[in-house]
Length: 386
Ligand SMILES: [Zn+2]
Image (tube, rainbow, N blue to C red; front, side, top):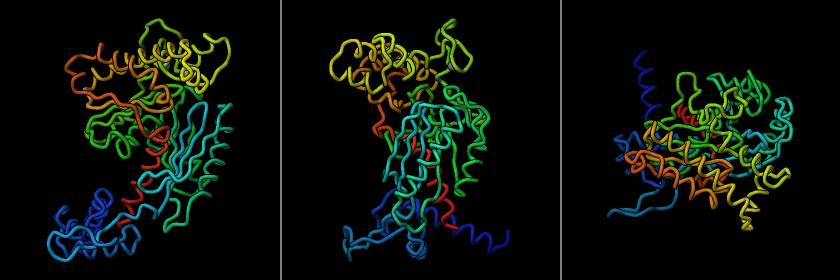
């Protein structure tokens, strides 16, 4: 690399450091940026001028003075661009339009009654187009689309296998890139949920965390040393398919007695139908519990015990500091939290249990969509300093 090449590289790196500092810690003054980053004031001033010209940073009125003239404060321009995050659940499809800091500008959710890829894909394209239309005018427009899939996704963004959708070998990223001509990220939904919690939710301060996505199936996303742990091929975290009953019922994955057959939305729906002798949705069952119907309340308490059992196994295996329970089952929190936490307390090893907090996501159902949209935001901000 030539000297000029080196200099350009260093300048880009410094610009990125300044941008990330303002993004995470705004409002702050140029002097505070200089202090935080260790870059001299002249460098900070010229990089900030460029970031203001890029419309990624703006100035606001004077902040607190430490003696002299009150300094102008710098803010991150979170509305310079927007991203889209889609969550392909099994019985519904949802998506958000978000700004650069995870504020949801628009949310759309549609039921899915047919699981065939072509149908779901058609619906998804329409849903994305609807979200795109909702984007306010901005400097960079829509910077990309992230799609979370309940299945095994490789590094090329192909869906290798989604057992609950019965999808195999779908080059989803490539297809969406061709259609929308925008950057696309395809990620496993539990990994996306873990990122959502790490960046926007309860996991901001946690180095080691497990996010459990309790949907039709169960997946987990593991944050290990502040980063998403993906395993060799990106397939880690398929905890829903841990066998908990050696000769249990057959699962869509081909294995028997998988955890998700006892503790997921699928388990709630099947058991709800058997108990009430009619087909009910998850919301119907939540409503019954809300009205105080003991049958529904007992059902959620039982699901809590099964959830707690699998979570305790994972706590013993990985010794995390935080567990976050997410996805749609969070709405059942009033009826399953107690039995879930009690089961974790009873079954996790005491050393592990003492060090872990078990929480429910407060990103509502948006954590997974926000997490997958963050992949685009992150790469946009990384490249923007060039
Ligand atoms: Zn299975």
